Image (cartoon, rainbow, N blue to C red; front, side, top):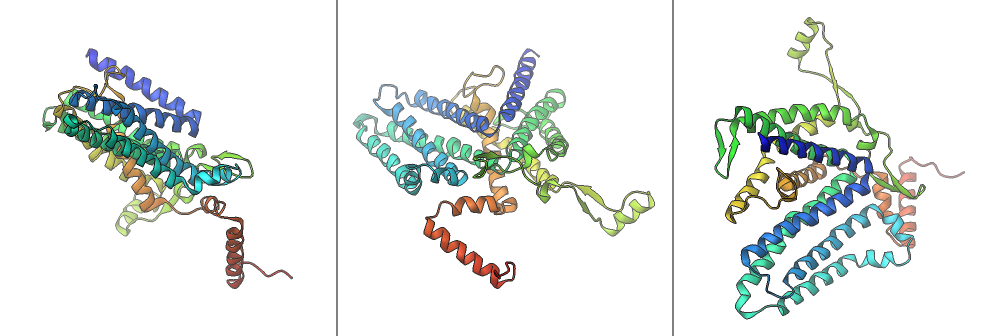
Length: 381
């Protein structure tokens, strides 16, 4: 019971802190994602150092952090170029960095690669190459997926908050159902997990996520894409809600319609289209999401450690809390690009402003000719 109380207290503290960060806006969320990423990377790398006992090798710890810096320069640079193209073009030296961003990023990686080769010591070859691979796997698992979290956020805060809350809800409810009703072991990798907790937590996640989505769909601050406004010279989060976040009326099968008519109920149903996407995301969080935790459990058992760290009482390290979040963020990013992401005028303008002035003029005249030919734009008198 003592551990249950401690775990519960710090769970609500973390939820409260998350709420404050959301209130702080996109910049606060980006900084938080970056800090979480750095801490997760440190926890994974420290396990590698402990396992391979490489503290006496020169430069290797520095190399790991150098690769983290190079990776962040690439991924955060990609985000900045995509979202702040107009602003970047107004600063004298930034267009150069944008044009050669990938070349600079690749050059930074090559410097680290050469640095690693020059640091090789004959009697430590196997351990050094093992840690080199360890570092790159950590970068893949942490940096790449934190970049996807930020990409999701720019589609609207709801695409960041809902997946995070789904994982949190599933974790809490699976723990509660397992604690009070758990009898049947679920998986050997995590002996405390039970089928009762897995199923109960999954059903609770779907229901509670739909309830949470109902309230979030009514808040423009959460549903509007985050875009840079050249006119206002700042980031904006105000918009006319898309059809996804407006109640829509839907017909039902004839049999259902007949019964609803007999019962004196409305023949159609009205709900937010986002509920459909929320339902599928909550299914992923309930069924596949926990496997991120099982993977982390197997990883810790392989290296005979209890937790990735001890920063959060009752929970372990930051990575212990984000093992499922990273997997969920990747799924949401894939889901958005597969079913949601539609080009908007704001996004297209960001790309247009990255072109040279003569290219912008060429595009303008081409678009003008096309609009005239289709009768959308009337010729000047």
